[in-house]
Image (cartoon, rainbow, N blue to C red; front, side):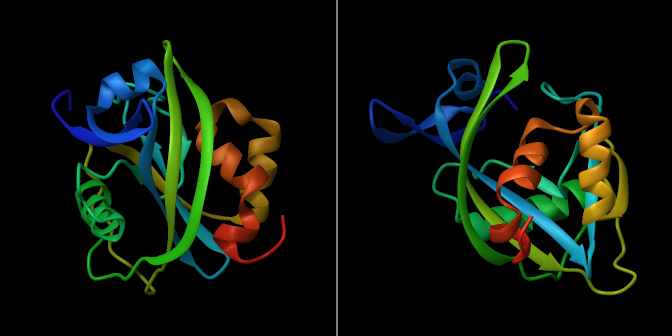
Length: 175
């Protein structure tokens, strides 16, 4: 993980920066978020306990950083496969969002995120990578909103932000 170079802005210029350093410095950097949907239900994942930030918290289907010069859609497909064993799907771009959030231990996610939605085929097989994902579940958006309202601490800051501020862009409907 420490040698992965991600695209981040340094002194106003897009530059390859080591991933952990980008979070330690709170640098604005590129990211990808994928929302796999089965009708009104979204696949969410609980981050593995070995993750260096936000371990054990629930997040959207897949969140990651493109490697230097990696296309965002290619990154979305790569990480769906690496994290969840999901292949053969077509991520549809939904636009970009930007957010800044404290993710604990002095680390900051300041991301310019390319957002993708995937329509899940019925009975889509999953093969979660235990180094990345400790659990998955399907949840309808109303239930997710309710759970975030009652137990926000079990969800990643970015999922809380997406659900509070960007549902129209991501899901195509008002909050």
